[in-house]
Amino acid sequence: MKFGFVGTNFVSEFMLEASNLVDGFELAAVCSRSLENAKAFAKKHNVEYYTDDYKDFLNQDIDAVYLAVPNVLHKDIAIFFLENKIPVFCEKPMASNVDEVKAMIAASRANDTLLAEAIVPVYTQAFKVIKDNLERIGNVRRAVISMGQYSSRYDAYRKGTILNAFKPELSNGSIMDIGIYPLSLAMGLFGKPKSVFANAYLLSSKVDGLGTMILNYSDKEVIIMHSKIVDQLLLSEIQGEDGTIQFDHASIPKKVVLIPRNGEPEVLFEDDQNSLMYYELTAFMDAFKKGLVEVPEVTHQMILDVHTVLTEARRQTGVIFPADL
Ligand SMILES: NC(=O)c1ccc[n+]([C@@H]2O[C@H](COP(=O)([O-])OP(=O)(O)OC[C@H]3O[C@@H](n4cnc5c(N)ncnc54)[C@H](OP(=O)(O)O)[C@@H]3O)[C@@H](O)[C@H]2O)c1
Image 1 (cartoon, rainbow, N blue to C red):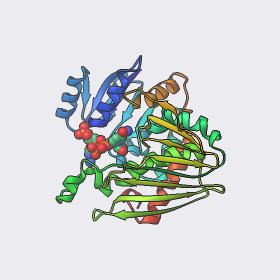
Image 2 (spheres, rainbow, N blue to C red):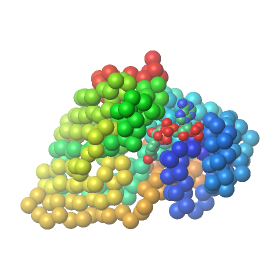
Image 3 (tube, protein in one colour):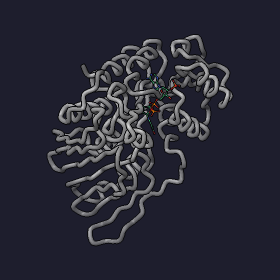
Image 4 (cartoon, helix red, strand yellow):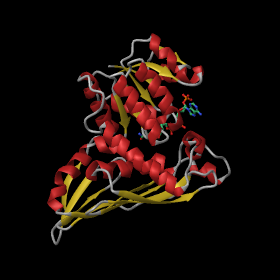
């Protein structure tokens, strides 16, 4: 399957590492805003075709596009390819807000062309193991699923330079970059909540540095914490009446442990896969081979539900992007 990559940052490199583990993957075209960057990336990965205009991909023999550029650009580029019947594997978050997500899904459906969100944790084996073992801990009453990662770009922010990761005009910030991982994982397990209550600490650039969401369900509450300005060392935990499931990471979950009430911990799963993007890439390629418009593991409805909550949480916390206006 021949891919065109739009964006040449480290996340594109991560995806290529994962692709080494997948049969039938070929990087066939590269696009960067700068022809120099595109050329360097293409040369590094032995790709003949490179360009500084993604529209040029239409002249190439490619089966799908992987989109790894700032969030604010996802919608227009994705819709361009979908309208030309080229499947799109779009980095998370799918778009700036839920209205954009709706437009992208509509374009996918109208053109009968695959569209998926590359949101690592919900494609993983660890996620499947958690889901399959939930009934063992009885009625789930609470989950605390969180991720906090001091951004490599926050040092610059503290010295007065605002890099992309903290720019509202690119639809970035903590809930978009980090919060979507625990939120998607929680909603993949428990579905759409009845309501959400959100809080956040806003930086002077007007994106959130960290925040919390409480998802209300009729029988449980799910607390989501996210941060780009402090590290989090806590495990995530799902608390049931008969036991607890703990896992190590909300974006790259690798180890899952079940602790029965009054019992001994049982390690349910430890992943030895180095690149967890392997799972999402495999799922996308399988869906392509089957001629689907969505990936069964992460349906369009689930993406829409997650982005409905994300957009509502931003509304409550005053994180407004130019793309929202
Ligand atoms: N799955 C994961 O683990 C993971 C991790 C990090 C990020 N992400 C997601 O991947 C996407 C890219 O994130 P990132 O941190 O790599 O973003 P980024 O550094 O801001 O931008 C990524 C690439 O997009 C291009 N770009 C940057 N600013 C641009 C602008 N103003 N206009 C047009 N193109 C621009 C650049 O590529 P060129 O210079 O080649 O044009 C840049 O290398 C985001 O959606 C992010 O949420 C996913």
